[in-house]
Image (cartoon, rainbow, N blue to C red; front, side):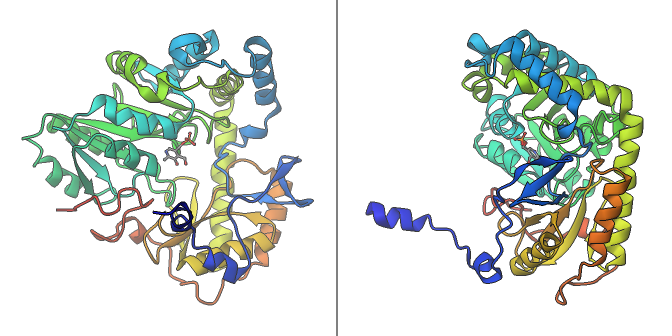
Length: 424
Ligand SMILES: Cc1ncc(COP(=O)(O)O)c(C=O)c1O
């Protein structure tokens, strides 16, 4: 292929964005003003980021990051196995293991990297991986690296999972992979049932708690606390860049697993260590959660409830579960982007998911309010929302859980697993 032709073959079709004269992606944000993002001199409400507890803009966290940078420098400029394993990283691993109730933990530069690197270290081509078909792109990418049999199960459908598990006897090892909180819809995996099923069929559960850590559970410790799972027998991953307000990822579980990954996981040993600043920031956030989750968690849930009430009142077609994520059905890509534009015009940032991130016709506009706004901020957000008008073509249906159970073949998220899965 001629290089010209090659580069042409990479061209992205932006026609819906061009037609709507609005591109909600890669918005060029300025700094924060009173904790809120700026865009071309205007202040916006951030309902797009995953800052569930509002701690990314907390001064104590900034202070802790600065102190860590002063002590260790801006970067370790080395991989953890070589020169990059600072005392503060070892401390963060200890504290994350303690926080989540796991035996041990490893810290990665991002959870995406952790998920992509994990599976090739623990699974073999003779294995089978059963995966919730809504699982995050990074899990899909990681699973594909193994070259083993991959079988999706219907979203949160434990009967379907059990049927799949019953057919795993001929494989060396079975894994069951899920997210805790599904980030596009806000549904929560029945992890307790899943762990029991895994026990019955000798399978290893793998859960990505990126949207659960710092959010779920009585004290914010995530899905294992939420589902009262003691001595979790599986593999746990999570992002440090959502409720934990920084950047980075973790893998946790048994000592034997963590020690094996420490010496074999390419995503860890060939990549510059997490920056000390982020390690200091996460340590500070863990301390804040330990001391203040009662107050901050209540504010997050209260704000979420008020957001849902307002959206329902405005007749938006919602899909929202127990997690603090509000998802509006947008239908087509065009409709979803035009919904995002409507919010944007009222100075509200949202996240539109369109194909291939979601199946065709299943566009979703995600809103996460979290604990970011105080009472006054909340009132002004509600005023902005009062003048929103749902586009005529937006379906207006009662809120239901139906959105969490789509039929087999209805689509695979994130495009990553598309075409590689059979639901038999
Ligand atoms: C479920 C899930 N897993 C993993 C990731 C990646 O996390 P990180 O941003 O730490 O790479 C994300 C982020 O979008 C996510 O939503």
